[in-house]
Length: 375
Image (tube, rainbow, N blue to C red; front, side, top):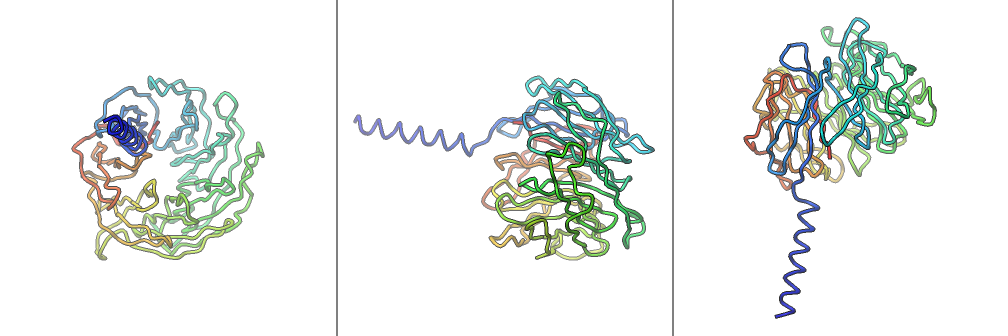
């Protein structure tokens, strides 16, 4: 009997440990929005429970905080203010993740009009800002107190491409550090180029090489927008906004080489694409990419051992214009930010198949366009 009780206890302990490692976890959500339509006030903070339900905690007034990022220790938040006519900026906030209270530290100009993306390094020495209408990117140093320096390194892109309505000039849309933080990979929708810059985070004024170490030319009219790095293999997945496709690239020593390009729809059609965001599942087995315009769905792919993608299916986001989406760190849920229907839809992920099921849970917020999980 003692042996049986001991065995039972071991099983229960192991099961509890397994659930703690792999089961659902409570998180917080930080949500960025567009405020220009008048139905949003700025940034919103929510509780996200392990069953997929949510509850409001706090909000912070801000102007068009359409993309944001937290510091590694989650004590600071950096949010773009997507203005034009010389008003493009970045706001730095002190942040209490327990209460959701924000303290504005300072605001600086982003170096170009309509900043639409921001990222940072692991040690939070810089933020890297993509200025869409300005056609440039800026590296802005972070001060010891979390505020932003007024000094910045700005690199201007030039050129155009074949889509005269959308590619009349350079439009830098995102910039992501490589996992080893040796390179910054920059997507320019206007010129159909993905540029790779060398990074020296120890240089306080010029962390980026003046010229790219390599440039990958996408197909004319593709419109590269965002990328996702594979967590354990040397691959980058780039979502092409204008053609509604995903480009698979090998990435080694700063060099990019295409190994596949695949549509975000099962069959070609006359529908208009507006591809937006792209993320791998935490285990790297599935890839998701959102498409707006006439689609309003997520393309789901299985990722092979060689990095190549196999189409699985498309999943409606149950709303309009999924500009952004996020997968929780354990891969249990996917949240789709439907900008034009003013709602975030919560899906449950099947880790084995990659498929999504609607939980019925919703977050009602005006023009949501950025979601960050807070642990």
